[in-house]
Every structure is written in structure tokens, then in C-alpha cells.
Amino acid sequence: MGGGLSVAARFLLYGAAFVILVAGMKAAAALLVPFLLAIFIALICAPPIAWLKARGVPGGVAIVLIVLGIVLGAALVGTLVGTSIVDFRQGLPYYQRRLLEMTSGLQDWLAGHGLQFDLNDWRDSVNPGAVMQLAGNTLASLGNLTTNGFMILITVVFILAEQVRFRDKLAQARNVPGESLAAIGRFTESVNHYLGLKTLTSVLTGVLVGLALWLLGIDYAMMWALLTFLLNYVPTIGSILAAAPTVLLALVQIGPLTALIAAAVQLVINVVIGNIVEPRLMGRGLNLSPLVVFLSLVFWGWVLGPVGMLLSVPLTMLVKIALENDPDTRWLGVMLGQGETPLPSLPLAEDDPA
Image (cartoon, rainbow, N blue to C red; front, side):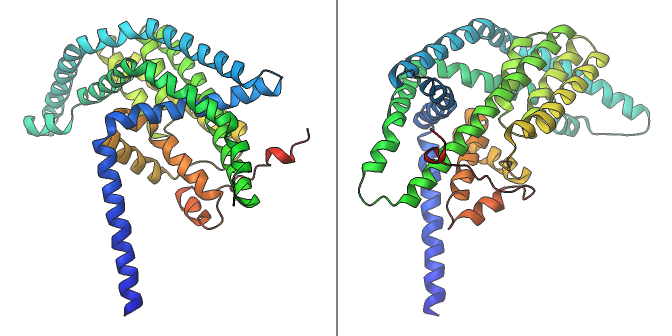
């Protein structure tokens, strides 16, 4: 009985600690979101810095070059997309009103064919304008982060500078066994590999989608390209969330045929890149279970808001990779995955021929 009570007490203790941790994260979301975004940017920047260092560029110079690239890229994106976000949010009531009129017309058409619906229940259940509202809120949240842009950039610089010396300091620290250093090396390699290639495929997806929407004549093509790039970090669900507002806008702006073409083009792009290009580049089982993807999207979105939804899968992926690289918790990493491909096995930097 004592053992049973001990297990129950441990479960209650862990449960209480988890609740307190989540409540604290939710209360400190305004502070956590910029910090987590800085960590995310730093992890994406790590492979280019390693590439520059491998070619003889000093670590400090490599960091400066990458930070300058970030500043120029952010300025370019802000110039191209900032006005579109403002215009879209100002025109959002018109688009929502038009969608409501179209859904009401569909309800009348269905009623004429013997399918009766209560109009109020129909509006509550079928509200495509909410999808566009969600897209506008997400983009607005990213725009609001520009006010903290300087602090985020400074945090990125410090994280990158610390990362350059972190492994050397850890190797010199006391009581750090070799297997721990090996696990940290595998974890770092896996994270950099995943986020680096995921960023490349996300850029490719966003560029192709933006070009296709521009050719179709759909408004704010650059803005939708940015949203597609961001949501591409969320497997499966992200492509749906990114495509839905563009299809609805095409329906309102041009007509059903263009909306159908826009949906088909985005489906083809996401299928080709997500199921052909991405697996060939990554070549390792780093995918999450669809259920885990959905639950992480809901959880991080609830805790950190719209930006938390964008960071949900990268955050969960970091947890999964960390679990997989520890023998004691590897089974948890397996449970989070799809179970279709073997776990990653990366060589350490020390094993690489130098």
C-alpha cells in the first residue's frame, strides 16, 4: 500500500508541477514569446554559421554576417508585406460580410432543394470569415513583435555567441561524462539538421505559393507567401491553415473557378514538397504523429497565442529529439513519432574526418 501511495503522491506532485509551470508560462507569455522566437531564429542561424566557420571565417565575423543578413531580410519582408497586412486587416470586415452573404446564398439554395437549416445555427456553425480573421490576427501578432525586434535581435546575438563556446566550456566542466557530451552532440546535430532543412523547404513552399497566387491575380500574394512559409513549420495542418484564407479570398475577389484552381495548386505544391522533396532531403524519421501535431498546436496556441501556434511544432520537435537522444527517455520520443522510420543516428563532430 505504501508503494501505491508513493506512486500516487509522485503522480500528484508531477501533475501539480506541470500545472504550475503551464500557468506561469501563460502568465509570462509576453516575455516568453520574444525569447522563444529568438531561440528559434538562433537555431536556424546555427547551420550557416557552422558553414562559414568550416571555411575559415572567425566565429565573431560569422555571427555579424548572419545578423546583418537577418536585418536585411527582415527589412525587405517588412517593406514588401507590412502594407499588405495593414490593408488586409482594414478590408477584413468587407471580406467577412461578402463570405456571409455567399454562405447565406448557399443556405437558401440548399433550402430550395429540401434541406432546411436554422439561419442562426447555420451562421454559428459555418463561418468561413473566422478563418480569415485567424490569419489576420496571426499576421498582426507577428507585426506587433517588430516593436521588440531590437531586443529579439540582441538576444539572438548573445545566444549565437554563447553557442560558439558552449561545447568547449561544457567539455571543461567537472563531472560531465563522455556519454553526456555525446548525447548533447547528437541533439545539437539533429536540431540543426531538422530546422535548417525545414527552413529551406518552407522558403521554397512560400515562394512557389506566392508566385502561383500572383499569377492567378489574387490580392496580397506576398503576404500569403509569408504566411505559407511560417505555417509550413506545422506539418499537414499548417498547409491547410495557410491555404484556407487564400481560397476564400479568391472566392470573394474573383470567383469559384479561381478559388478551385488556387486550392489545387497549393495542394500540389504542398504534396510534392512535403511528401517528395522534404523526405529526400531529411532522410530521417523526425516526423511527429499527426495527433501530437494537433495537440501541440492547440496547447502552445492556448499558452502563447498565435505565435505559439507557429512555434508549436518546432518546440515539440526539440522535445522529441531530446527524448530520442537519451536512452532512458527514448521510448517517449518513439511515442511522439509516427513509428514508420528508424530514429536518427548522427555521427558526432569528433568522429568526422578533420
